[in-house]
Image (cartoon, rainbow, N blue to C red):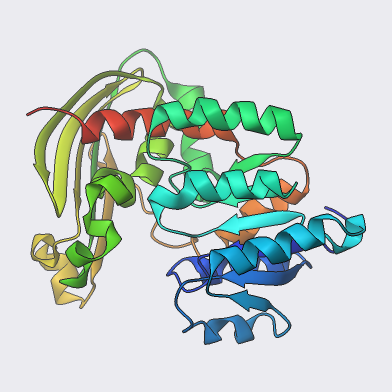
Length: 305
């Protein structure tokens, strides 16, 4: 890890996932010096850093970052953490590279596969790096599963059933998340981490069929190199199974492999910090790591039933 504290800026400070990035910046001994959000209800910043230069207008944020770019190396912004709506990721990654900073971007890195090629060119031109938060790859249970499959796979495909239901209220369809052109739809917005995990462990897709496609839920079947997968994703609380409702839970996550349940509900809290540690140690997940799941999510989104 870098010996001297690195300077971070954060875009999307008022978003749901932003506090995990703030915590990761703090946990790794670094400093958040600037933050941007069009809304000013960001008192959450005070839990982590007090001396943050906060902006509600991108133009003023841009000017501040550009002024720092011309100063001494230790005064510049070294990393930009991107927690903005999905459709803005591409533009905000480009901003990070333009001010000569590395980009750490939430999922999905971009919505469309061809955007990755353009970003790769810009990455090479700038000499800076683009990283994606693919935190499930650092979950201990998922790592153990990958090791098990690599050791035991004998040519017979695994049968997998994935269900993920996370309750969202009426606001969901009114917000940018309910606009497929901005969020990528349910498969991208809540499913891409799971698709990345499945492709990472069980190989590339050979067949992709979508059997249900609605604004609040999707389902389909995948044939991967080492597995056949049935999946269901939903933000409709009415889809919660009875076992979840009886326990008062609003989220249900189930992954069965050959009828055996894989329990990985816990262990998510600190994964962003672990991703940041990897990045600061010269590792991290980049464009090519993100590409397979972005390709698949794009195909699912555009599948004609």
